Amino acid sequence: MNALTAIIEPPPSPLPDSAPLLAVRGLSIFFGGRIVPTVQDVSFDIARGETLALVGESGSGKSIIAHTIAGILASAATVSATTISFNGIELAGKPAAVEALRGRRIGMVFQNARAALSPTLSVGAQIGDVIARHRRLRRTALRAAIVQALASVKIPDPERRAKAYPHELSGGMCQRVMLALAMAGEPDLLIADEPTTGLDNTTQAAILDLLAAEAGRRRMATLFITHDLGLARDYADRVAVLHAGQLVEEGRAATVFDAPRHPYSAKLVRAVPAKAATVADLGGIPGKFPDLSGPVPACRFADRCDRAVDRCRVEVPRLEPVPPDGMAACWRPLG
Ligand SMILES: Nc1ncnc2c1ncn2[C@@H]1O[C@H](COP(=O)(O)OP(=O)(O)OP(=O)(O)O)[C@@H](O)[C@H]1O
Ligand code: SF4
Ligand SMILES: [Mg+2]
Image 1 (cartoon, rainbow, N blue to C red):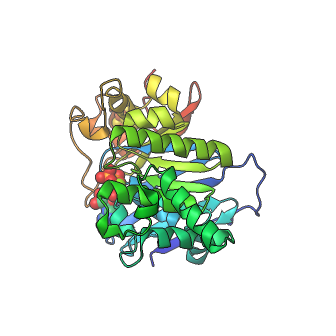
Image 2 (image 1 turned 90 degrees about the vertical axis):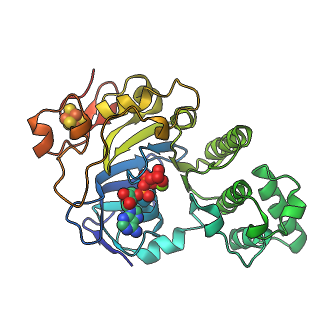
Image 3 (image 1 turned 135 degrees about the vertical axis):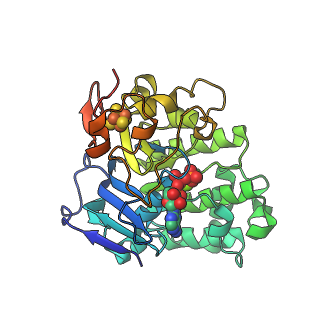
C-alpha cells in the first residue's frame, strides 16, 4: 500500500446536505522517492448532483488523482493529504474505509476498461454481482436487471451480450460494460476517467446524457476526467484545470470557458470552439511540463507563460478567488 497521511481528522458523518460530498484538500502524490511531487497540493470539492470536469494535458496527473480517491493508486506512490473526505468519512490514510465504499458508494470507470473487467466471468455475471450486493432480487428479476443495465448503456442485443466474456467484446463495448457495472451499484460518486474513450460520437452523447440524467435523478456526484474540452463544457457544472500536477483554475464551466483567468486555461479553452477540440490537439502551447526529477519553477507553467515574472519561479501561487466566481493560482491572472 502507498503511505497515506491524514493530518486533520474529518468532521463527523453524516454531513448536512449542503456540504460537499467529496472534499479533497492538500493532496500531493510522490513517485520513486522524488522530492518534487508529481501532483502538488491539489484541493477541490464536489457537491451532490454536481459534475466536476478535471481537464489538462496528458501526464498532468488526472488519473493518479482519481486513483488516489478510489484507493487504487500504484504502490510505488506516496500520498499526503490534509483530507480526502467522502460524505464526512475520512479516506486519507484509511484503506479499509475506501475499500468498503469502492464499487458501492463510489463507482469507477477507468481508461482501460478491458483490464478492469474479470476475464473469467461473463459480463452479465459481473453486473449481477454488483446488483445483488445492494438489491435482493429473485433470479428472474436479477436477470432482467442485468439486461436493463446493459441496455441503459446502449449495448445492442443485451440478452445475448450478458452471456459474453470481456475478450469477446470490442474495446468500446467493454467501456460500456464498465459503465453499466459502475452504475449498477447506484453510486453516490462516480469517478469517470475518460468514460467514453473509443466510442462513436452518437454513443458517447447517449451515455453522457444518461450519466447526466442519473446525476439529476439520484443527485449523483461525478468526477469527469476528459481530454475533450467540448464535452467538459457541455456536461460539467464546474471545471478544474490541471497543469503538471498543479490545479491552476477552478470554477463554473461557463465562466472558465468564457472568461478564463489563468494563462494556461486561456490557452486550453482557445481551442474549444474548433470542431472536436481536445487537449491533445493543442500543439499550440509552447514548451512542455518541467522535468520533475530536478528543481522546478514554483509555478510549473512559468517556462511556457508569456506573463511570467521572477516571483512566479520562486513562490508557488495558491488558488485564490478571482472575479466573478472562480479560483485561479496565478500571480498575474488575466482579466
Ligand atoms: N506508477 C508510476 N510510477 C511513476 N510515475 C507514474 C506512475 N503512474 C503515473 N506516473 C506519472 O504520473 C504522471 C501523471 O500520470 P496520469 O496517468 O495521472 O496522467 P493523466 O493526466 O491521466 O494523463 P492522460 O491524459 O494521458 O491519461 C505522469 O507523469 C506519469 O508518468
Ligand atoms: S503564476 Fe506567473 S508563470 Fe504562472 S501562470 Fe501566472 S503569470 Fe504565468
Ligand atoms: Mg489518465
